[in-house]
Length: 302
Image (cartoon, rainbow, N blue to C red; front, side, top):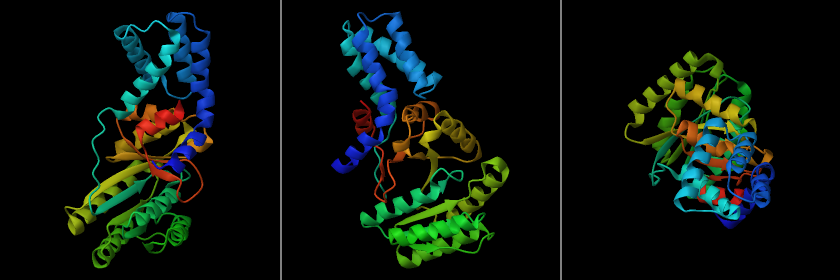
């Protein structure tokens, strides 16, 4: 991440720092020895920072092992140990990502999480990197979704393929794929409906879209990204689990990290879902959505 974005990340995580790292720091300063009382206090701080019970227990267990192995006796030295443990969890099983020349990205998520905004910001990011970008407005369930995406296409300076409200989403995707071929598009971003309350409809719709892509652009790499709102904390993890029952997901876009003290949910997502957080949003600006970097995140958090 470039310097400016790291500074934004740092200030964006300030509420999480207040509720998490500052409290950990305080507990370590007051501790005389590393004992059960300290572990219990750390556990409580992690749980109340929306990291979740399972993830917290895992962090504490790893921390105990690290402290034993490295024979740490000074409470002050627990601080870097916690940092290392969290970094290890976030980096676990993270493959080296090489971006292909062409890619189709399906964006899913319920209304209100920042799905349309994320597509707009991602489009602007890809365009700034020299890609030929196209948006497909396949969330035809809501007229507002199509109009909002059109506004973002203008802001990002990229083309959009859209039909009328109530059209068949797969037909929109078909037209977008044809346009992609004829215009030499290297990044196609497809907005899809977020009707999680009716999983059957959602599954059928996404399956149909994927069949169209298989038929028209087989061999082009595709990625399905789920947009989650960081301010909902553990509810975001529950939502992700529900979506994972409806369709395969490759990664997470986490929005509104700057507006919450629940930034610890990043660790919970990785631990509970074994899904990489691919992009994070820390502001309103068009450039405020960037690739997630675990090391930068931990540095900014601590």
